[in-house]
Image 1: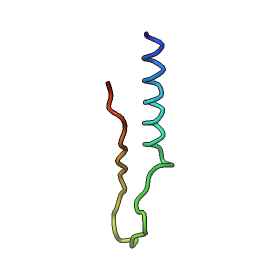
Image 2 (image 1 turned 120 degrees about the vertical axis):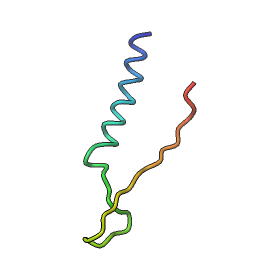
Image 3 (image 1 turned 180 degrees about the horizontal axis):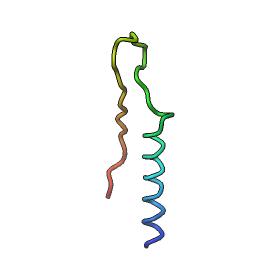
Image 4 (image 1 turned 60 degrees about the vertical axis):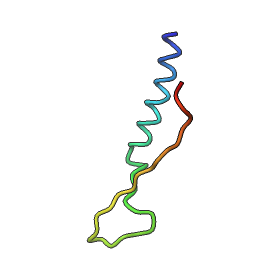
Length: 50
């Protein structure tokens, strides 16, 4: 059971690391003026955790 939890949690943590990395940071989808601030957030829908 311990290895299953570690494997599953490890996958989740790996995904969080990727999603919060510099490669996934966006400030706009369509462009913005240099004087403007902006950010982009993603909403990810998943199956229910049972």
